[in-house]
Image (cartoon, rainbow, N blue to C red; front, top):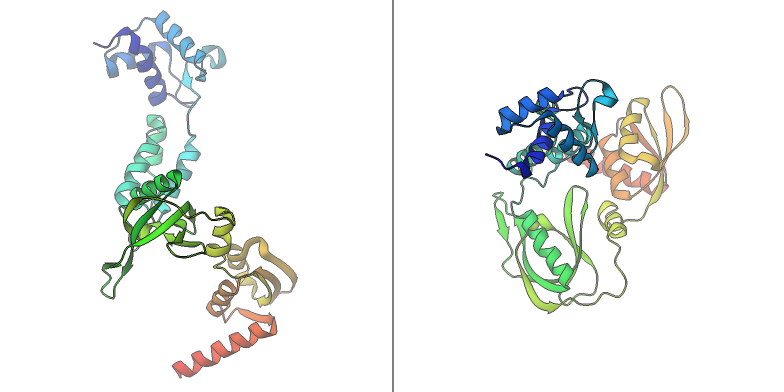
Amino acid sequence: MLSLKVTILCLYEILKQYSDENHILSVDEIRKKLKSVYGVEMERRAVYRNIDALREMNIEIEGYMDNRTGYYLVDRMFEPSDIRLLCDAVAASDVISDEMSKSIIEKLISTQSVYERSMLKRLVYVKDSNRSVNKNLFCNLDILNVAINQGIKVSLREVTKDYDMHDSVSSEAIVISPYATFWAEGEYYIIAVKEGGQELTHMKVGKLTDIKLLEQPVEMYFSGINPQEYAKRCIMNKGEHLIQYEIEITPGLWEDVVETFGESIVVKGYNETTIRLKINTIHSKIFGYVTGHLDQCYVTAPKEFREEIQKYVYEAYNRYW
């Protein structure tokens, strides 16, 4: 038998699990649910009193005076659309294992009413099974963040793949002064300075193992560290400078170009067969794009880049013919 002190929590759980704007509960329905789920007998006056108490805690509950039907919980941590977005993000993440992904999605869905939960469970979340996941990733992040907060060095080993696709751990440990962890381009990174070095470097947290805290203070880095700027410059832009390129594409390639280069595009002109563009981007990105769409993409400037593409095509031709 539950004590009277906790019955208000039972009422709150009934509203959370079994009510929403499309499933409004009358007082009698609330009492029946309390009895069937928790074995709690609650008088009508107690239902009203407990709902008022929940409202005093700033929990938003719509009632009979609002809808002339009954009560439902308005105040939820996440809306169904929020949960769908978060579940999609978890499922799409390359750094979360299938097992962990399923667990997190279940927890997210459980924040909704049983009716919304049923709808969300019908959605399909597809995960790329070709990507290997480091099961210790989040443990690594925790250790590194402890080191950053305490201002101490860590030792670690790097993990690579050998030609048999097995993990190969470096024989010698590396000592680093860690400064920040961040997420970019689908990976978690650590910004650090290696022992004996002077320049900032970065490593994928998922490619590290055997991380140990050392009782040594980090080396002071006096140039200042902005993780967001560092990620954009060194990872997203791969340390390359932005350059303006001019290309011509077929109309059929337009949507794909927009998806790839976004707001860095300026349209110079177009007709039924050709769209002329200026794109402000890095060399490796535009090179990969042009060489991957040679039949629909033509470089007009700069001259050096045109010549580079010509050389690439010529060498590829000689290799295959």
